[in-house]
Length: 119
Image (tube, rainbow, N blue to C red; front, side):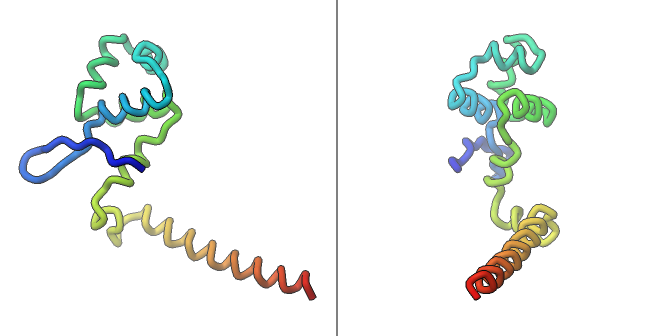
């Protein structure tokens, strides 16, 4: 996955330019500003201002994702620093670990079933 363009905040903290992120995904999917504005129920001028903003309300990002049928949250999660993404308190990480364990168990079961069918 390509890295998201970053803007500097105060100090060393960096964050993605969300308007630019939406703009890139629109370009990939060949969706115009006016089409996005219509799908999101805002004027073209309002939507154009969204694209210029480095920070957007969650609602705007959510609606843009629905309009494009694209998961912006996955992009943002993938770009989190490793120490944040793999935090022990992360529910997301817990789900991944549980699914990995389930996959491991299912692979064992498949191997056993293949042996039974051969016999």
